[in-house]
Image (cartoon, rainbow, N blue to C red; front, top):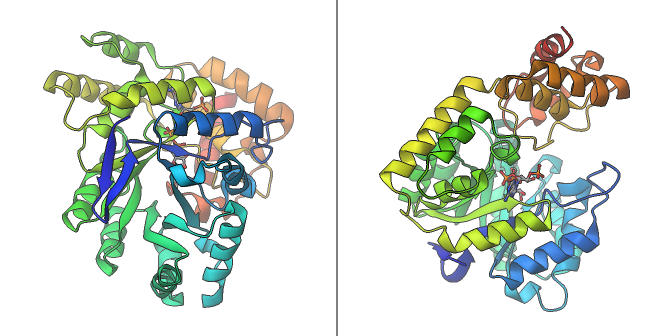
Length: 380
Ligand SMILES: NC(=O)c1ccc[n+]([C@@H]2O[C@H](COP(=O)([O-])OP(=O)(O)OC[C@H]3O[C@@H](n4cnc5c(N)ncnc54)[C@H](OP(=O)(O)O)[C@@H]3O)[C@@H](O)[C@H]2O)c1
């Protein structure tokens, strides 16, 4: 395992591969029903093989991820890792709510402190509201009480807001979405460098773009990967690209099978800074261009838009729409849409345009409009 360090905590050995507990295996197509036995095995395998950073959040797996992490970290595992979780800022209505939710999280996680604590998924509305309600005062007080050690925020909005938040406070770290497709999206590389210049540590999330860079790799993309002198899986290329940046402290991977944990842990030894050759970087750039030309909707399948009040499976519809375009297979996507969406009454035609999804989407997708276009494409 390769280790790096946060500027705020140079003594802490942080594994380049962090365990993101948002994509654990689950039963009955219900992310709230985590397959606990398998998930605990996966987390412990990763820790036994050098992972020292575990990331969860209040809402993951319908509120059950923190409970699962507590179970996985029993039997001495808590002491082997730095534990990160995120405050559900959207639930805060008054100052006392900040500490109320932190205390609930400490109880769920069965720990007396969080090592790395974040304000979760900041966007303009959330930030303005919680800043005015005293979020920073709360964080400083929580640290003084020993409930949290280091604090920062995870981010899903435009670059100018990112810089504004960075300038508000000398944060310890920030968590941003970054992969070779998202260099100019949300915080992007410019945001990363802006934070680094101010001594703020960087955590990367969605390194595989939520799995979309590794699932059904299009033939023209695979042909480019095949040209590489050293053969790597698409996942490995993604991790190597993120790790190549020496300022990235840890890369969170949401792993949903033991095989993925084994592969990612094994490859983490080579996730070294500045280790890709100019030729390899050029190869990745070729792949990026192909994807850019194909992607229709910027959905990362984070499911923050769910549940939809009208019952539409929004990420499911957008995935089918993107799949049809990215993989040039409208008929296949239309078949899946019929089988999995229309036949289950969760297709885009059920959308009432209520707009609840609009404020929830970290990617700022115009979901009701896109659903109409997707439905027409998938049913023509
Ligand atoms: N704070 C926030 O706002 C926020 C938002 C998003 C994520 N996060 C955190 O960041 C973590 C990482 O984000 P993410 O889960 O979106 O990460 P990601 O690594 O981009 O995507 C995860 C998906 O990648 C696929 N995958 C993983 N390893 C693979 C391998 N070796 N080969 C092929 N496919 C592989 C899996 O897809 P399949 O399941 O389809 O196999 C998995 O579900 C999350 O788990 C969460 O802890 C935070």
